Length: 365
Image 1: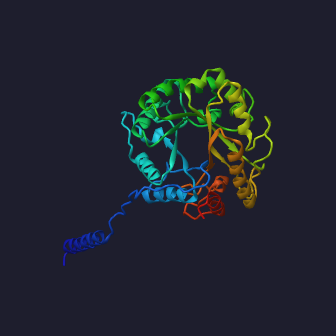
Image 2: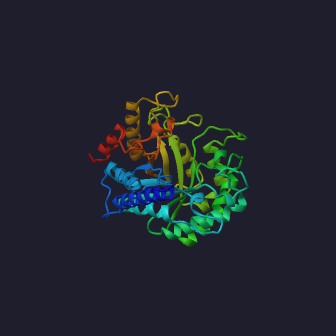
Image 3: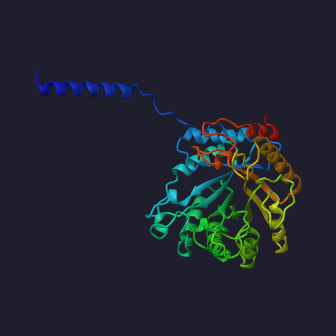
């Protein structure tokens, strides 16, 4: 047999083998939202911050949101990055947001959508993803408006940006509260015109003690005061804040020089002082960490107790707080850092003991 005949025969057999294997491969699993569900809970203020923006597989998105519902949390905070969805031609790919929102709604969850990350075409070359300059404000506003319009009746809350009092969130450059108020001033009327029903949240302010002039950020109390002085009250419907317990129990007294769970009360005093008591607050990141070697962590048993006591304290004492959302429910993959010790569920969907205890607290166990 000639080499050419041998090669042809071998190639034909290989082709037929591959064809057979392809025909044997099962069809892709079709993930459907299923019948509409309702969250059963005794504590409607319980929430979690999910991290599904980087989750690819539909079944993992669905399973995450099912576990949120089964835990008794009616709320999720989710990140919808502008940079992921809109190209330089202006077209927006809604495929992934559609998937998240469809499954979240099917599970009966209320969504707080966090907006951020700037596409490369809207920022200077080689700048970080968070780099947002004033000339990009209108484009950012248009994207948020398109989002609000598309998901009207499905997404009721939108946060403009994230932790604006940290310079990292502006692409490692120093900004002022005036910069953020200017952003709100552009975004608010455009988004409200697209969807008058959406509730626009300012913030979410990061708890920090950084003094004026710091290269890292600005104390959240000083930042909020400066926002009001710059006229921010006319450009948001609710205030999103972050509050972490670190090593303190939830009932520990707040103080201007302390970072603990009750720092929310100091922010509230500023809102009241500026005649904004009617505006509600939304805690979109909170919780305790149980990393064995992080100096700002607690023991696993303390974390569970502090978390449950924190929910109880908020419900009993903060009528102006709509939700206390824990950071973070689950990551798609391990971060291999202290961040993994904030989660309630592993990447493999194994519930940690804290998940079970929250489930019992909400009445779902």
